[in-house]
Every structure is written in structure tokens, then in C-alpha cells.
Amino acid sequence: MTITDIEDEDLDPLLSTAEIIEETRRPLLIERHRDLIEEMESSLSDALITGTADNPRLATILKELEADSEQQRLQQTLSALADDDHFQDLDLQQAAIEHLCLLRERMGIEVATLQIHLIGLYRRIRDLIAAQHSLVPSLDDLRRLPARRIARLLNPIVALFGSQHLGDAMVICPPQQERAIATIRRISKAIGGDHDWDDAVDPITLERSDEEPFLELPEEQRAAARQRLIADRIRSRFYRQVFLAYFDRDSLADEEIAAHKTILHWLESIEETPHLYPFMQGQTQSQKIWRLANLLRKVLQLNEIYQRVAIAADHPSYREPFVGLDTRERLRILAKDRYPALPMTSDFAMATMLCPFDIFARWVQDRLEEQDFVLPPEPKRRP
Image: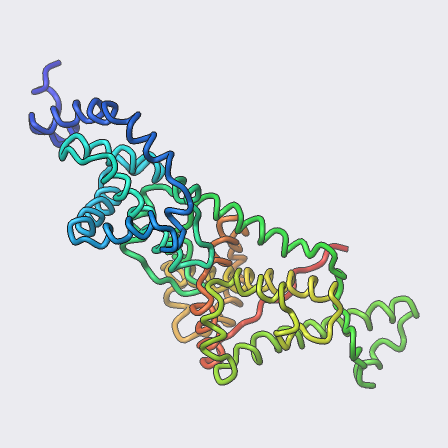
């Protein structure tokens, strides 16, 4: 078979002779300088990436990074790492090393200058990630960032809470992801919590009208039913204090919103200083642990039901039936159709918990103002 026997559509666009030569030489050029550049990269420290200008050497480096020529080169490197297909399957460390090898080959740049350039690159990417999350990456974190995510850093998207694009908007280094998941699991396990709804200060008493349905039950059943009702009242009061009182647009100050980068950061703050949050006051320590775990799960549930409705609304089967209906009515239709819930994966939990807190707070306030805030029911307990 000759090349003329193959249909045009079966062939990739042919490279020019110059491009073929360039592709062939590229790995050879990288290997020519790899050892030197890898040694230089391995000599970097967190002090140079995350430190302050109190370090005399860092102060000198930062001054050199301010030069227009270096800023231009830095932008070119960021664009290359984001757009060049050669780097898409590499982590940031390996992609940066290969790019610097090519810079040294093609432009003859001194290693000392390349080191300053690499420090500037790591610092710029660190700042871009830190602007999204309270989880500021270390040097080792940055090294493991997939290079393909740099394009999202340079062209960020803003996704609302309850949107299926929430995870797409997030850029985080794998070690940061592992630590965030560990924190989510720790809080959700409520280790040391009461594992029950109880009022430590002012136990709820039931009205006579609430007591009457239980009077004809055997004593043991009556006590159990009464306890379930009291627990439901306490649970309901807790969530009202959180979502109706705390998030009230006229009560939640902008300074309080700005104090928390992400939902997870907000939950960690509640864990560390529960006495500062009205909805956590008047509780024993073990009750606070238990209620925080329930609050975390409730936020996950909120994201799940609103994402589920948003995904369904994009489908032709529901586009017309959903017109003019609020979220609660749409959920009733989905429940009747047995529309499946979204899986609560680690990625889903992480995307939810690392949603910027200001986006979440404004989302809650908007839903309340539009009278379209649906609090998910408690999951059914196993007998």
C-alpha cells in the first residue's frame, strides 16, 4: 500500500519538514541540559518561594523579577506551559524543567538567571492558587500541580454553588487535595461527638397537642417517639439559626464573609472557635463536634440537590416541565421519576468544601431572598 492508497481523512495534518526536525531534536535538546536544570531546581527551598523580603537573597531576587524583561519572559513561560501539548501530561516540576532546558538551549540563558526565573514562576502560580483558596501551596505542593491546570489558573471561571461546574473552576495541588479530604473526613466522623441531638442548656418541652398522639402508646414506644420529635425540633432550630439567622443579609457583615476563604475554612473556624458563632453556643463540646459534622453533611446535601436540579434542567425531558417551577417543585418531579442522586465522591466533597465562602454566602442569601431555599431532609436512619 502506498500513501496514495490512504484516504485523506485517515491522515493527521502533515508536519512541515522543519516541524518534523524540531520534534525529533526536542527530546535531545532537553536531555542535553536536564541534569544541570534538575540540580538547580532541586536546590530551591520554601524560603525562596513562600518567604518574605526579610531574606536578603530573596529581596535581591524579587527586585530582579520586577524587571520588564523578566515579567515578559515569565508571562511567555506561563503561556507555554498552559498551551503547549508537550507539557499537558506532566506535573509542574517536570514541565518547568523541560521548558527551562529549551530556554537555555535556544537563548543561551545562564543557569543563575534561569533560577530566578523559576522562582518567579513558582511564586506567580502560588499566588494565583492562594487567591482561590485559604490552602496556600508549599514548594512541594506546587511541584505536583498538573501542568494542564495552569490554563484554568490563567483563565479562571466563576461557578456558583449548586452548579455542576463548581469542580471545573477549582485549581488545587494534589497534596493540598489530600489534606483537604483528610480534614473533611475528620470533621464528618465527629470523633468525640454525642452522635445525637440534645439541648445542653434548655431542653425542649413539647406542647400538650404534641404529647397527645403519644399517650396511647406503650411507655417504651412513647418515650422513643417523644425523643425523636424533640430531636427533630432541636435539629430544625439549629439549621434555622445557621441558614436564616447567621446568613441573614442584614446581619452577616462583609468582614465576616471575607474572613473565610472557603466553606472548609469556615467550618474549621467554627471548630476552633465555636463560642464566636451564635448557633454553636450553649452546647457541650461533644455536642458542638456532632453538630459541626451534621452541618458539613448538610452543605454537601445542599450542593447535591441543587446540582441535580441544574443537570436535569439542561435535559430535554425536563426543560419544558421545569418552566416556571421553583426548586422544591422540580425536586418533587425528579423524586416521582426516581431521578438518581449524584454520587457523594471525594472529588464532589472537595469541590463543595473548597467553594469560595463569599460565593456560598451570597448564594444562600439570594436563595432566601427569592424564597427558593430548600433544606434537604435528614437521611433515613438504618433501623
